[in-house]
Length: 129
Image 1 (tube, rainbow, N blue to C red):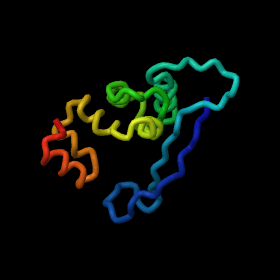
Image 2: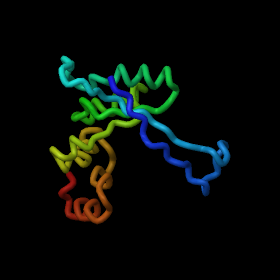
Image 3: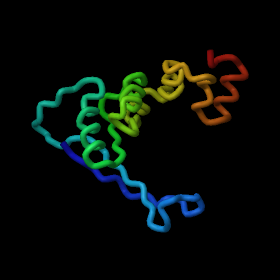
Image 4: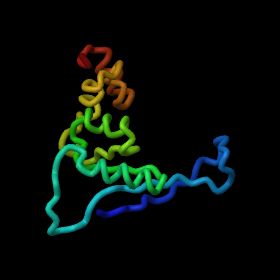
């Protein structure tokens, strides 16, 4: 298992936070880096590892492995296993994934997960159905 600490991002000083001047947001990415490992590929297969890291480190965690299905990603987030499902690889394979995920998750007005010009066009011309 490989824990990748994400770059710390400074909290917007304009926001009214209770943390003061030294507020940072940190997150761990859960992955692996073992060329000869026998990887148990499957839906959200690193989610239990991410959940343990999240619980023991008390920090947000993210993973990108096994979240091709939007229902799997949503369940892992809702169950508290991960805080963020990274879907870059999924988007490379299917640029319409966000729209299709919104439909699968029964989001009202699924076209509006897209940039406004696209969402407006899809909604206006009823292609979003």
